[in-house]
Length: 210
Image (cartoon, rainbow, N blue to C red; front, side, top):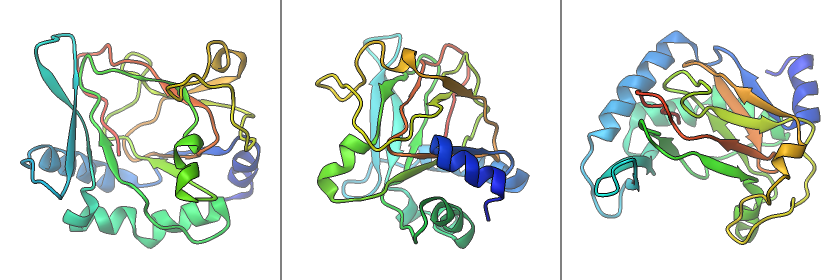
């Protein structure tokens, strides 16, 4: 599934940005399905809704929803279907399974994520390889806190961290960082060791992604 240029980029950087991989129809569907899931009520033991504080400290706003794939047949078909799983298997060199599903809503005023690696969070699960596939629902921009990925930094080593798991000051700034200005229909795949971050959403619209 990966052409030679994509294979080389993955081996060197540990991430890929594949434009229009899902296509226009899936891009439209993801927007519809995101609205559907956002309207689901809270049900203990099923999907999980998480909130954050925005500019108004007295109010809470939706930050993310997790564990929706078991309850949404069409999303399950998309994200656990042969095209997506085949892409990820090509990246890691072996079959893959879904470990976690999540929608980040990143509403106006929503917080970003400080620079970090994902790998430290998964060591205790005994997982040798973990990759993330991100699919934008809304276009990523610098203003709304696009994903930023480090280049040439896929070595399987723990970079200097703070106690909260974020990278120490200056670590990310010393790397060559690429802003990923992805659009609906694109996918981004990145290895758990790749340092990444995103800024807050300073725009007036959400920056949602699966």
